[in-house]
Image (tube, rainbow over all chains, first blue to last red; front, side, top):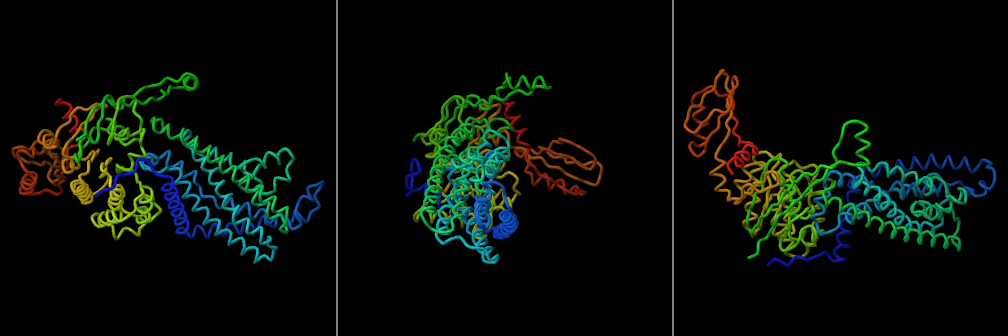
Length: 281
Length: 326
């Protein structure tokens, strides 16, 4: 006998389905291992160039307080972490653009589970695999180049704040992707987000090197929660109250921005789906 | 028994800004847009009962897909009411999703990068398919659609016919009571079309499933459905059993004969010449008067035939004929 179908999906079923989506995303990324390998090689090349640049900067005499603000060994580890996170975010905005503008979203809306939760879960699954691959590449680079490793406590913290930073990255790109409900292309919004990551996220240098007002603005932005906060942990040379305070600040910022971005995405998603249901797209 | 689908005076209007010519019109369009309203569905009422297999047909832009979208819940109507299993589709989409299966012929619902098996697994989670019933249904579909050899292949690498078999099986994985099929055989070759029609018919008959199908292929309608609803300009113009429609409107075939000689002839009762060119002629066969194979055999007996094409009349032509008759 056929069981009675549920009237609405239960929370546990939604979580189970999202977990399956994350596993599928991870599986897809692993299946494309040549791309994964290429990404890791590109990451190592990037590290080689950027660390050489920052090594040179740190040995030059810089005016004012800027020289004092830089770590003695340059910003190798800092840049390594920002690139580690930035390179691990799947292009979910393009997937959303395709689905929304190409009409595939309608087929998804006929399923009992949220399209957006599934797609974000798939992207997060892919992001974790990429983080793992580029993470291993970073450790190999450090070993091969003979550079100082961060303390073990910092490595342990990165295992937590790295994926959280990745989630914020996925959510930022999701915001860009949702712009497809109103615009044909997501590229303009994506360009704004990329510039913000550069300016306020501390992609190439810690935001503490910026003018005070800009540093403050950056510190309270999701872009810093995505890149600056995880990366700045590596500037700590030893475990202690300084590292603990930074780690707490990083976690607080990341959790707060995950919730805020999640809420914002939910509101924009509802407005966008309402447009689809009215036949305006 | 209450109907599975009940529709009363359903309407859908689309509003588009009219594009003027020149810069002045473009500027005016920003501040005071001039809208044009299109009545895609214009007051449709119908009822579909359990285990009925219904074709909704009509020319391009008639309102078939818009109707299907409203009935499945992805489009809100501008007016009227509709219930599917007692639920209002566009307000109770999630609840309805567990009870319907949808196949879009021109759009894949599977994950192109994932193997078929992984796509089925993911759909199992999305529809909360657990337990022995779900496993048995999945195994049955894999066997019936002969999907065993395809399970390990990424969906993106399947042929159109293989993919369509997987799409239909995927739409049936959660055991829906109602199946919406939008152009399920579009682009398929004759063998694949026949297989898909057989699958749909056998599955629906076995499971007591209601099927609502849109298609431009008259064979889909004849072989799969027992009732036909013809929509034109957003309104129902015909709603009758397929058998009755077949007798009235689907009793013709178009046979094209190619020959090396300049003229091609075929003189039989029930055969009418529709078009002629040097070395080619198109004949309309009235299948109530003469069987297609007899007409073809007669043409071959005359000798000198190089090529033969047998086609159904274009759907637009059938619809025109239906429309002219009402």
